[in-house]
Image (cartoon, rainbow, N blue to C red; front, side, top):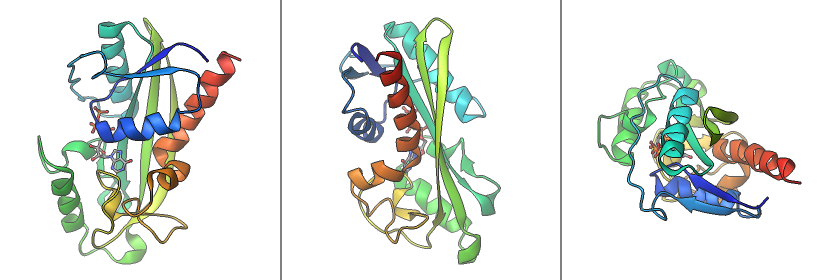
Length: 199
Ligand code: ITT
């Protein structure tokens, strides 16, 4: 595929992962920073799809370049799916990743190991023209540990142990996380779609 793709995110950790995932495509991957675009889309929808579409469409309106936005949440079964869509501001507005992790660990401190199951889910919205868009999704099942392990990754990575692994996302390298993560699964579907429509 040739052409441009604008990553509609202000999260530099996500940019690193997504650039790695799309590296093999013949495409110019641009960031908001590359275009000096300062846009902070308010994520006020109550679904990942709603927020991903809102981010992608508002940034397409501003840049008129095909763009992808992903919205991701960590859904913890013992907390009825919290923090879910509200993962970035679980501990309040303008909080750190660590604040969110601490609140999560506190809220499930009494939950026994077998009930600490959780999943990350990512929805990617590819927006390529006025009201022209499509979605791709990916999930990763795992469980929440009782304490943090590892300094790699970002967000809730240090407390999430993916099923079948003895290392948390905070202990896995970027390449290892990008083989199994929610975002990887969604972006690999997206990458294959882009490759297929341009082959
Ligand atoms: P943009 O909306 O600008 O893309 P964001 O940080 O708000 O950035 P999301 O809404 O997709 O991104 O993600 C919500 C939060 O979920 C994010 O701030 C992290 O705390 C957490 N998160 C997302 N992806 C994650 C991952 O792969 N590993 C760990 N935590 C993640």
